[in-house]
Length: 356
Ligand SMILES: NC(=O)c1ccc[n+]([C@@H]2O[C@H](COP(=O)([O-])OP(=O)(O)OC[C@H]3O[C@@H](n4cnc5c(N)ncnc54)[C@H](O)[C@@H]3O)[C@@H](O)[C@H]2O)c1
Image (cartoon, rainbow, N blue to C red; front, side, top):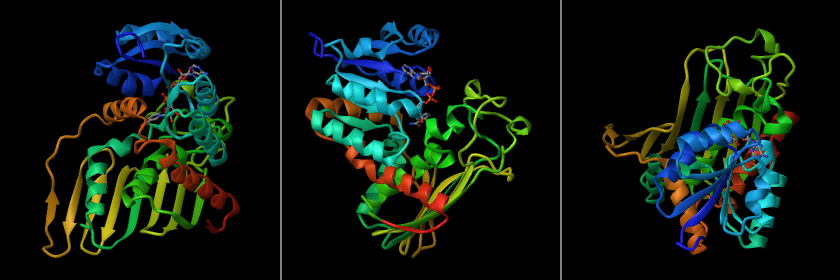
């Protein structure tokens, strides 16, 4: 905190999520300063500074920010493989940390990060931003109020036509990403489902994963590629799944899902169905939801604003560092979904059901 009682932030990683989500949110927050924007590629940090006038300094070594006693919070917005190291270093330097999703590349390291944060007495939040999406908040409340009746099953589909991101780069290299469609997209879907179910505990699960669409990276066809600047189809690696399907039993509803970064079906699907005996709801991912009433056979559509979920999660994080109260995105509340991803990958690898 500085002498004017402003919370001082350092941003590590000035790529897409920094530029599209957190830096625009910081511009709208009065009680913070962005003292450092750090990127290994100086021009990316410099470009961010030109776009966002809150950024005060550009650096390429995040340890400069960690050594600055005025810095309170570090935002870790790097690719997945760097989450662990930067977060652990920041906690050691006595900083609160916001780390983008997924926590890191596996569950064991995620637990180490949670333990380190709790030992240091510092907040560590994870960017599962959908927990701050207005539709998710409303569905969570509906379930808590028993509006679904017996919510017995949740089904979700996150499937796109031929849209593997950054083929051959960090996204498709398991050592750097932790996995493919599941850890990149599924993390949001499964995490928000566990959140809406109200802390469901995992019982058994099974999954099958495939990497079929870009076995030969050079001949892979696509219309557009997210993170194309990181692709390396000549010399890179593609050892992660482009399709995954699974079934999960919990102490609450069962969950089934299909996820595809790429498939030979040219119909994109991004939705979650909540099936209760009184009513059901379909959430169109990132957008609004509809409720289908079992007694009247009516479809109920709600009219509500959807505030910027990144701004909501960033404001809530800053607030939690000031009050010392852990919020819904605290790592302690995300570990169950990290565990879920890990065991789904284990099940797919062993080709058998796992009991937890
Ligand atoms: N919450 C969401 O909806 C959402 C959406 C997209 C991405 N993400 C997550 O955000 C993270 C970043 O994704 P992105 O798409 O912005 O990636 P990106 O590649 O666009 O940006 C990452 C930046 O980090 C920099 N970097 C890497 N290691 C660094 C280090 N040690 N020090 C300083 N800079 C470093 C890179 O040079 C790069 O500029 C990923 O973990 C991703 O899963 C979350």
